[in-house]
Length: 197
Image (tube, rainbow, N blue to C red; front, top):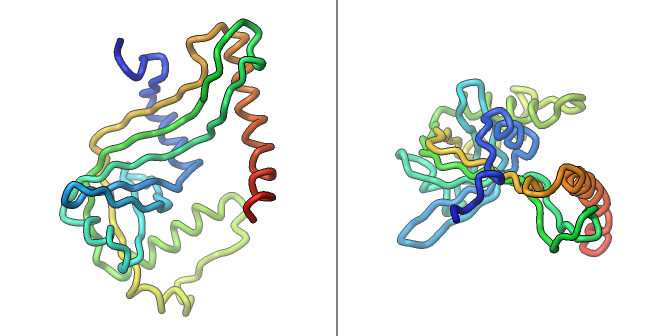
């Protein structure tokens, strides 16, 4: 049997882009000397179909985010445990999730002006739709950090959408699992934060 099953793959580019735009915090994975380096960074999907990001120059992974090096990127959407009690028919426990796995090559962007513009654009994207904060070009704090931030651009070479949403179940069970995914994600955040923060 092929893995993952076809019904858990979503190759619709618009669906995968929507995951990237809605859940922009990516897991970026590079490999050096057979050891993975992993950083969690917000990445912005631009009009040219590339991912733009920034990394602290002291992060060891920063040295690998250049020179057409290869990276693996994971964007994580909503996920949750699905109890058999959710289904209308008899089922086993499972876990539903939405993930997008990408392969890409990286190019460093050295221009300070491009970096500044990118920081402003990323802030505008993340502040949407209300834009309660605007990062101004003459912001003194931002200027002070430009020497410590590296900008990079990623060209995506492979896309894989993993949308495990009970597609192998009956329509009613699929709908019940969808409702549970929404309910669990809304309720679990508050409970979790009470325990850790």
